[in-house]
Amino acid sequence: MKDKIYSTLQLGKIELKNRFVMAPMTRSRSTQPGDIPNDLMAEYYGQRATYPCLIITEATQISSQGKGYSYTPGIFTKDQIEGWKKVTRAVHDKGGKIFLQLWHVGRMSHESLHENGETVGPSAISPNAQVWIVGADGVGKMVDCPIPRELTREEIKEIINDFRVGAKNAIEAGFDGVEIHGANGYLIDQFLRRTSNHRQDEYGGDIENRIRFAIEVAKAVADEVGAHRTGIRLAPFIKQRGMDDDESVETILKLSKELSSLGLVYIHLAEADWDDAPQVDSDFRYKLREVYNGKIIVAGNYTVEKGESLLESNLVDLIAFGRPFIANPDFPLRIKNNWPLADFDPKTLFGGNKDGYTTYKPYSEESK
Image (cartoon, rainbow, N blue to C red; front, side):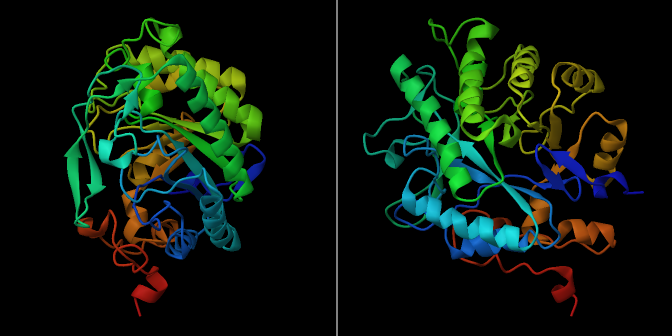
């Protein structure tokens, strides 16, 4: 039985036709220079609204400082806003809903991506991780992240404002809402963890201080575009990228309580997937329901059957799928009709042209 995943849901002021969510996935296809969304991206997202559901875009930097990978799009220039309008129009023409994911990578970056040659973070601590960049030879490769420079208080306030402006720009571009990227070892997540945040001011130390930045970002965004259009992605169980912290669950629960007070429309949990994080136990899910009143989205190697079971338990409200949408633009429709799923080509995930991006067809065309 796959009944509940095809049921409607009110998310803020929009009605979703089902509980499927296309998870955010970096694909690095923006136009250069300028990190500008383009016609190819509009075609890609429009294809994935073939069976309309909630789409969350790839992570999108709120400033040039917030960039951590080559060819990822931005939301801080006029040209970028105009480019995103093509994307939202393509999705809305199919009856879909789309949120933009607001992103600052913090220390998960490389000096070659920044004019001043430096990366930044809560503290001057390396993530011991790599990012994907395209070199002068035009070839993409993974490179080590350097030790970042510690942000000043003034810079923190500027970044909070960048999130606010990014949200404003997203609504101007036609998005139905925004998702703050607070997961996967990026800037907000870096502030949350003791392993990456050694600050001695009001943004570091105990849990109350370490969640301060996330709360201030969420409040700024919600005040600008409305809490009913503001979600956030969190990853309490990630361990890679220097995020291993035995206080992470307690931290996320305290933060979630504050986000509930702000009225954020959803929390999106990034669970076990590429990080091989542990499976989430029901105790955490019950506690999250107790402290947070909004909707809960979960993502991370879910099968439709497992997702349906969780929906029936009423511990979550929506199920996000990533990789299945890459090669199956009509993924929810394929599941509904028990049609076979296509496999994606991992060599075409990042960068490149239309191949492995818009060349996957819906089953109605594929089966001809």
